[in-house]
Image (cartoon, rainbow, N blue to C red):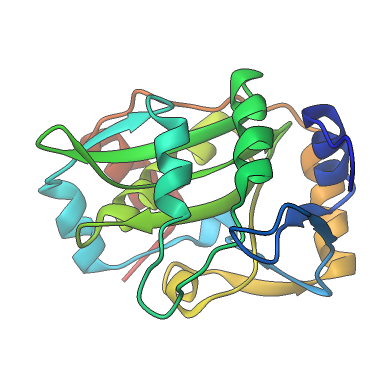
Length: 216
């Protein structure tokens, strides 16, 4: 995968592909086109009572796009059960370029002036492709995801792609769909216009999620 640039990357996403590396040290990337794709239906986002309480008493300052590179570095950190990562220097460069173009965004949780969790992903038309998330403090990534989902709903997005299904994402309503179903949803999303939203506060996020998604 030589001479890969941001424009090629955007076209790949629009075709249902995304890149990964075998490890942090590997300089090569490869394209991934899963047979089964993870998605979070935005109108089915599951907000537990516990998450609702956390949002009401949010211990974090939530920012958007203020530390994109730092969020990527946080996502690349080793974590329990995972000593290596697929986020190599080439991934860092490419998504940094997408961010500079306004096509990649981060949601960040800050506490006492320190970045303690967040996520990043790619935005094309009304589709958002979630790439990775991390947390250094309990609940930071959950709050970042809640802010992201609320912002996507407010902005008119219709697809939140999580690439793969994990147990962590299942608690928020994530599910697997076939490649064929995914491409149909992707095509619909690419035909629509949406605008990435930022600057929301806890009460607005809570209101959007309570009115638009599933609560239990």
